[in-house]
Image (cartoon, rainbow, N blue to C red):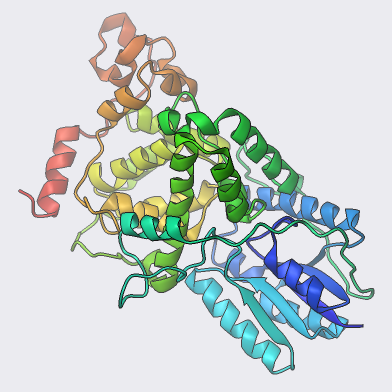
Amino acid sequence: MSVSVVLFTCDLRLHDHPPLRAALRAADSVVPLFVYDRDVERAGFAAANRRAFLADCLTALDAGLRDRGGRLVVRDGDVVEEVCAVVAEADATEVHVSADVSAYAQRRERRLRRALESRGCALHVHDDVAGALAPGAVVPDAKDHFAVFTPYFRRWSAERQRDVIAAPRSVRVPNGVRSGEVTPRGKVPGVSPGLTAGGEDEGRRLLTAWRRGGLAAYEDRHDDLAGDATSRLSPHLHFGTLSPVEVVARSRDAGGPGAEAFVRQVAWRDFNRQVLAARPDASHDDYRPRHDRWRSQRSAREEVEAWKDGRTGYPVVDAAMRQLRHEGWMHNRGRLLTASFLAKTLYVDWRVGARHFLDLLVDGDMANNQLNWQWVAGTGTDTRPNRVLNPVAQGRRYDPEGAYVRRWVPELAEVEGRSVHEPWKLKGAARAACGDYPEPLIDLADGLARFRRARGKE
């Protein structure tokens, strides 16, 4: 009896899963395998919120496989060693896996290919699983990737995506392949109290609700901080419990300006993936150096800690940072505001902020997190690298009544109207009612002047 192995990584689903379909077609039985990667943990990227969400995803994946007559095989250790061990136990002839774009994932793929070839086992890498369009599917003339989003999006939109694949009706798993246990969510320490639930069923439920209740208004409401009118699908896209191909297809089927605007955001995810696939060092090096002499976490320690704790004195920044700590997630407009404040108003190295986000974000993704931080810092693909977002003006625009601020900064709950965005201007009893809410860390004009001098604009 022929056997294939499917290595699940960033694709923890059964619907629209090309590696699983290919493995089922190629062999009589399949080993669905997930490996807890020790190297990820040693590198400090196994953040508590993602580990807890992962527990939900693996539990749901195992349940879905059991409903189809199979099971999930779980191992713990070095991915290459564990895959090779499973191949030997099952006498498998081929392994199927989804492509990923980080430098680490690319190195792991090369190691795995060499190890399997030495055992006479073929490795099949599927590059159209984790993104709606594979990195390198569209490229500009004489270059290996697009460096500006708008021309990329035009080509991306014109490219025909593959068809969505149905989930398999049955999965036959060979006997005799040992498996460990999924670490339950409840045994993961340090999880944000408001962390959302994971798993394919939950992701599909959210997508259906989003199409019915939020997608049509997305163009008009996606920056509404208090309205929380975004899809919240990003954790499911990160873990692959939802297929980006299916998300785009179902959104386009719904149609309308809201769907078009939402699909554009999914394209941004693919854009960042194709940048990182071509330039893996961009996860830690400036994509477009501006010769900055950033302040470090050590030299700006007090300011960095105040930013992390949501105590900068700028309410909309603090609200977003507190949402991040409580939920392991942050509204996209909040991500832009908090990143601009750290990198440009405080002039702290963007890598400090990117690392903190990765420590907490359930959707912490190397391509999107690092390259979006660089976009805001002006060292990435942004065509306006010296843009600075004013947190007061942004708060008034995207949280005009202050509801988002009051939700996350209870010290300001009694401040009425737009005054909540400038509590330092309150007098007497009104200011006293804010309790120990801090004064601003820095005057915005001073921060802007420092940044402009650093970039040689003054």
